[in-house]
Image (cartoon, rainbow, N blue to C red; front, side, top):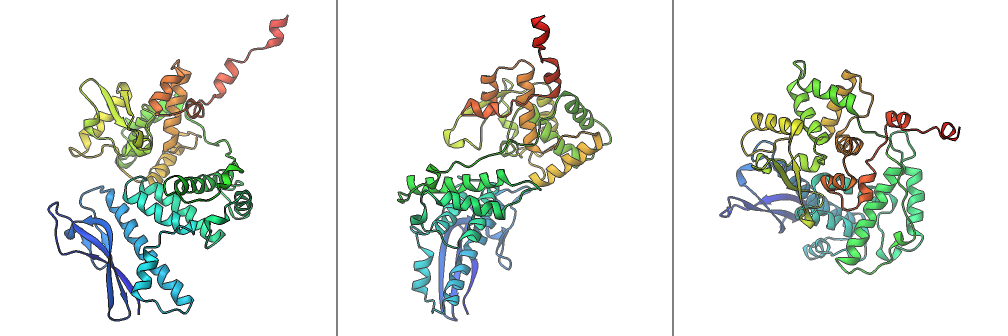
Length: 397
């Protein structure tokens, strides 16, 4: 019977880690190790469950590495299943050939391999990987195999038609969900053609996915003040306080969640400037500097006083858990806006511009490459709609 498991080398390297392998057993005797090109401390590895265990509190690498291990086993299982269903005998030489298949013809296989490489090389985060995996699963339902040669001027239109029948999102028509699927597929086609020189026609040269305007809105001064007051109140729980602290820090700095969870005390320099390279644009290595003042400085100091030295100051609960807590806080305070972490970033840009901030500085603080990206967040509130309306009829009198 064919089987697979994760094997950790007994040899401990100078850095204290040991290499991890996928051990494949065909029948009773044929065994081979496949180097996964990752390593982990032996004392923090569960041999029974094939899992990396946290080396410290809030060890973010644990989840990333376990994703890699799980996908390696999944890949082996898929090879086993393919040969079993075809009634073919699987030898180790055939398994090695399938394992090393560069997927130069099948786009789904290529995308699956490229996702793992990008995660292993930290080109994408574990959250992005999971989002891309959902797209991959949807593609797999659309067609188990998609040859690069199938991409033509009609392919994206056909995929869009299929998505319309099979995508529903929160009671809407799923326009933005479909846009996300197309965007991800288009990105991997671009990587295949530009980075790996795979020749194929780009179906998105003929099809432009549509994106609906976001239904969520930023919060304004009144609600922001209510949240600040609640943060400093006696009735707030520790869990809610840490969650709200992260959200308010985003409201006062425009930082993305991917950057918030990485903030450390040494990011703040003696001149009062918070300096960091945005995770989303890390390849460009562009430094962002934000003067930490007022609310942002107070929240930062609160986090420093509570968190262990050297730890990430705003790394608390996962995004989904935090968003649920924010919604509970909003309900308690009578805030009708749909609160989640991205609202904080939008709130900063909107209020910054509303209170006289310049658009180019909003673009700089937000870390946007194009000014059009910043304009998306320049929401107009109902107060301004009423206040700044001009009755042209009265002027004509």
